[in-house]
Amino acid sequence: MWKLWLIFSGIFLIIEIGTVGFLVFWFAIGALIAMVASFFIESVVAQTAIFVVSSTILLFATRPFVNKFAKTENTTKTNAFSIEGKKGKVIQTIDPIEGTGQIKISGEVWSAKSLDNTTISQDTEVIIERIDGVKAIVKPV
Image (cartoon, rainbow, N blue to C red; front, side, top):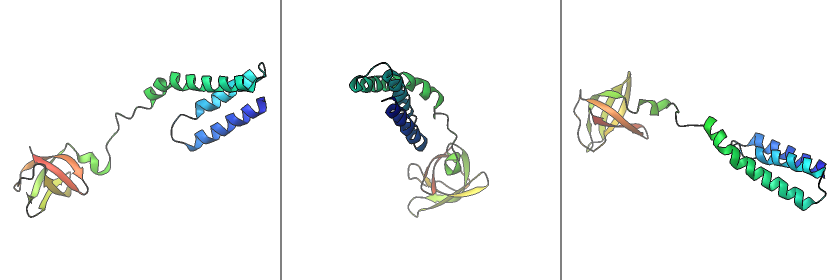
């Protein structure tokens, strides 16, 4: 039976390689623990129970440890979202009725809409609240 547990462990490791999360790895370790248990215990039911229990314990015991190293809270905004929170200058009056308006930020020209659908006149300094499609949503500073 130990050969079967070793094969299961290998299959779980191959599946882990193909996945993004760090979940199936613990089933591979659980299969290895069941393999060691198979040298001492003849019952397949007992070996399977050892596999399930050990995999579950490893999964829940190591989850906080893995999450500690896999934090994604401090990600850096890239591309268009990198301008959120920055200041720009209106170069074409933002008019929600006409649907016109442009701002200039860091040398780039962006189409813009006002956050509260008000008109913002040319040369007004604005802050970019968010990006909606290809338009910057702004409010006056």
